[in-house]
Image: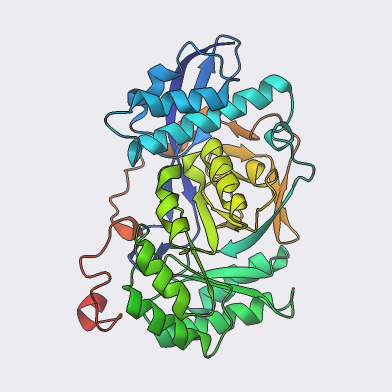
Length: 384
């Protein structure tokens, strides 16, 4: 079996709500989802998800190769861009190809990827995470009630700009998830919007009223000294890593003893997650994947010994993607369909995209000019 080509599609996920974080809110409830389909001479397609605009920089590294040699092909892609670097968009393309290669490997074996990777249990423990900063209290109750109905006993709120509001919302979340646990897990995500001293003050104030399991990305992702400083100044664990594009970027944070929960973005692929999980395990640290549409890394999370909890951002799938998994008992139940378990209805995707203007969003993916430089987190100019 050889890789012969690829197709690239863009579909959408209708969240049914506006999503965002402390850096901004999307202007509409539908967001783009990028799908990569790797073609082979065996008539089997492999599916990967995530932005892959730089695919032509690395595709030659896998074209004509046997997709079952996934680990070697992953290193081959990294070597292909040795001089120019593999970070950013290129790492996303490597991740999407890597997912599709693992999908092909498991399909060739006739089994779900979680079994190919050596997992015994198809259940992946999770936590609810609604990307919820745009919701009012009523919307928050509605969303997390749906998660609670599926057995979730832990949840993560977006925030960091309104202390009084964040405290109220955390207490709402605690009450909702309290039906499934006498001590629900509460997490809080600031999305790199604070400086280190501001982070300690803000989290300390939250901790006077609520018990936080972790604070996520309190300062910039690469700020090992800052993350370590925050970690020493608060009771909650510090979680970070979702935006790190390469195994080597974790080294300074781990050497500085700056992280308690090692996070990995789904969009960076299966192999990257497995390698980060192994490094974290060598330091007795848990690993927690940050979600993306269809939760492809859940298969790998089921197979590592130090997986803590998988972020679940929604209970529906993107248009035209049929995913063999369920949400119950506070986690993800993976199915038996061979591969990653994503079936792509290309006709439905094309029909849904016809006449639909592309979104023009800055939203949470563009860092505000004053992030980390505000004396008052929620200033009048920011609210205007």
